[in-house]
Image 1 (cartoon, rainbow, N blue to C red):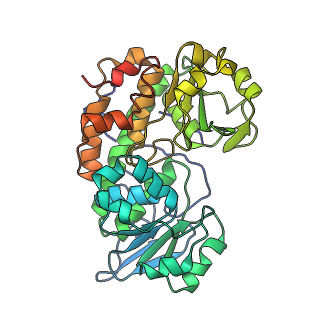
Image 2: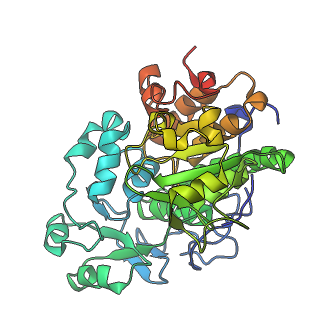
Image 3: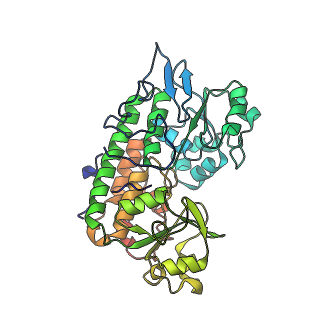
Length: 392
């Protein structure tokens, strides 16, 4: 993926329309977003419009038509980010009846389980780690709609359809797909205006951050994101969302482009390759338990620029992990922008922005202690420039 994004960046000035580029195949709901949150030049179904008295018809990202007699009231989600996104669009978990275990773990470990305690009681033993569904368990939840990965092959969808279930196959990977997902969920929930509002805000955030990034182009630090670190090194290479937002804020992903990791996506590398790249900033994802201290205390990494300058950071974990695309991505963009260019950040208002965004997305205002937990304030406390995110 290759989409792009000084002065302080403030939430009040961060509002929202962009040419959105993304990873993944073409999809009818994954077109470039217009300012209404729909899809430019799309049919009524692709824009998420209802058809017929009370009925809803949409086209999923496989090109399959989904017809509902009315707004979905019992939804099962198998793709990992879908559960949290559904809660954000719906501003509650009332209509979520099942999810993948990895989604449940993210909710348990993050603030979502505190904001909506009932989500921890939702069924989450309905599919394997390979997303192969336990059809009997899913059928038992009596869903109006099941959300499944659309790019993993018919073998994870056909058994559900053969059981008489309505299944939407969605693809994922970039900003364009995220915009499409928001539109899709808002449509099937019968809340198209809500989806349009979320997309409009996000698109204007993107434009603002992109303007900051363009102004810094060429002067940004070398950055490396670890999807996995604790047991084997896996980094974000070409055509990843991490590559997108590193470029967006004006940094350079050392694992992409000339001299980067071969191929695309998440790539396994060895220690020697990381040392040769010598990143100035290291980001540790939320898909394992690695923390900055793991690098600071290991002599193997002592010569790494990011270690010498104490610029290793654990990526925040909010209502969902901030590493992949989600409804909270604008907060990740701001957080990273202020870490990469701390002199531009001025008097940081990120904490205020978190409260504002969470109120908008979830109808909840996190406490200072909850924000500290989201930002991994304790784990990141010994890293450079992190004091800007401390509570005043």
